[in-house]
Image 1: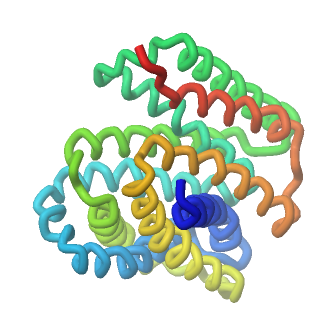
Image 2: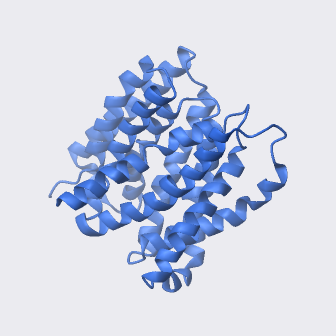
Length: 289
């Protein structure tokens, strides 16, 4: 990996690790937006970043012909997961949300097996799935039993992770040669249209500057630029190595939550974090037959 690609790789990890912090501030029940408005805001801003890029590199118009596939992708990648995560973060820490999302490779492996990918039965991958689910089980159990986090909110983020896993596999099968930037830009437009009615239900309390700045940063940095950077680096180093950014996301999410928002580093996170990361890594690694 060249120095340029390494820098882009680390940047992608940071940009996709910090959104949980931005979401936490933006959806604050006391002086923030509703989760639906946050989803609308981030995809509206994100689309303003990605669509011009897709038009410039001449991938937009070829991608939009398959808008039906992209609409399904948007449902499972943005419409559903982002409202679930935003709602959940009103009751759980940003670090915990980021940690739970790191289970995506585990669910991706299981879903891929349903589409004929028999490599899931390799011992290393099965061991990874088992370790990963053990980590999730312990994380959910410890957080719930100790009262550190709301169980329903935890389940919301897990549901979002399953949606993420399905969305990527679905769009990869339907549009294997499609531009990631164009697909996600169009998906953001679809999601923005879906959530536009949320603007009619504006909060009756004053919105803090922190919430406003967090929403803008979420849209520009962690939705628009993050997708552009990730697909740029993926095109150069390949999807397998690019997928490793997932583990960096989690580290950034947990550390930033503790340092900036003073979130507690709970027993559940300490126990579950290494197991989920190790399990996700092993579950997503293919070995030669």
